[in-house]
Image (cartoon, rainbow, N blue to C red; front, top):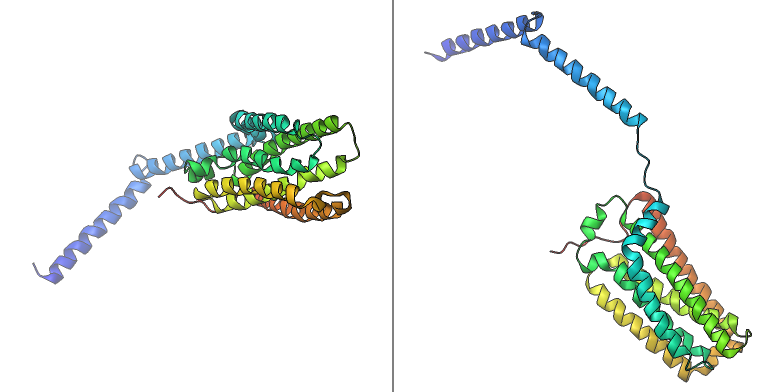
Length: 271
């Protein structure tokens, strides 16, 4: 069979096939009509399902509800470690009641007690899985920060109250508040910056950094007494405003990431 004869044969065969399909579509008992009926039926079912989903749409989980979920999973570790650090600090402060300048030494320890909850996903290499959860990573960080902030606020209040009780005087309460807040803000800003990098090694870096802050504030309290004098309270106020601005800026960045549903930092896989 030549090429010309083969082309004629294929053309004739294909033309017959097309005619058969056309006749089948016109035939009420044919498969073409049944196929169209099936398509219409599926379309109607899909429309009904969409309408049902709109009528019975489940509400999104609010942040308050999500915060309670985080509290169930992380509350014991956050508040438990804070309570342990608070007990140790109170016992130590009771022996140096006449030296409120030693208060900044213990503030990094409270941030250190928050680290297990803040760095848990990075330590176990679960950042990718956490990123795929129903809440954005920034929302998770924000919820943990709220719980940690509440625990830290309670601890600071107890420490200041204990110091005031031991000294039996309210004259230095403003200085003691600054002694607690300034080191705390320094440590929190440092920890949040390290969380952004999302590397497992940052856990060790943050631990060394917090302990280094303890030593630094201790040396200041012992060797630079004028920094803790009443005449130098302006330095503490300036330091408070400076680091509070950095902290608020970081919180604002977390809120922006939460609204956009983005990650607070870069996700690194275990490999």
